[in-house]
Image (cartoon, rainbow, N blue to C red; front, side):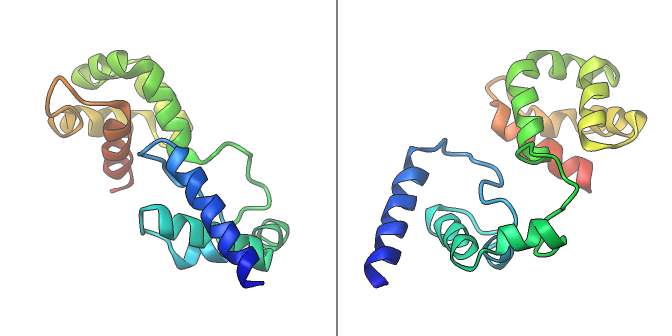
Length: 152
């Protein structure tokens, strides 16, 4: 059993090392994801996934709506991942729209987050300098800041 667990941890670590450096919410729902919520790095991610798999808590959670799982949820990768995918393809236009306080990217992001369009536009406009502190920002940093601002 120890060999299997050790092999799982090594394999999981190898997978985590090959993933992008700024993965967002990569463990899904389940007991492991709840136990290591808020922690970052390879070890907490591998521990969360291993716990979820060992106890079958994701399957149980999805079936019964426990452990942070939603039985009616869509397979999307989560709101932050959807925002990141959108930002990676629309960062320049988002910057233009956020600076103006209106635009299609803000409308789309409001839809992704299930928020009022006017609220999203106002928060993006008021926090433009936080979202874009320099010309050399990347989509991951903007996404993380945007998500925090919208949830505040």
